[in-house]
Image (tube, rainbow, N blue to C red; front, top):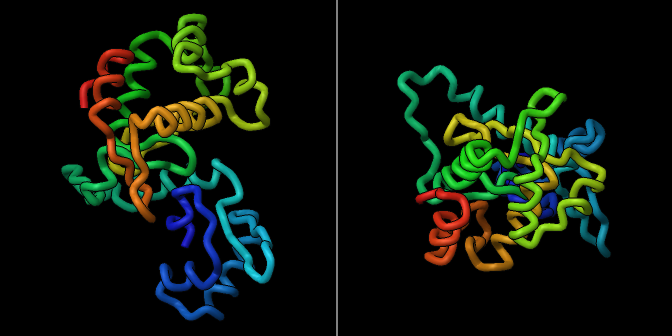
Length: 207
């Protein structure tokens, strides 16, 4: 049920029961526990209760657990469905080959540097210019009450992609400009031809 919520969309207990393959009453018990442990949050709208992950940190942990679950496999052979491997959402930021590729290119371009906190990234002056050129209000993004940028271990690639407020802003830009297109009822993202050209010209990332 938690992994179903990784796409950032809220779902009802009935929908999550179907996903989990359990009865509605069993799902209700689990959801009460998950809510009590602050793993999910609930929004009441009319007669319906909608559940979503309580924070991006929970998505980060779930993504890392995927790595632990498959860590015994040697050599590494990703079992990720093909439609999810190229590009998908990890809560509210880009993951998959695209997300990892952007992480590596931003580091190589000198836009991001290792921060003081473990796993965190700081933005360089060059990075501020680069992300501003994408139409991102960097100062406003830095003021948000959440981690600005951090390394989020990717489930399929076993390498970090960028999570946090900055990465969420990048996903918003990519969706708005139709570089990537959401797939119906899935975390999968289709990378449009325009998106491939933009990734290559702006970041030197070839998909």
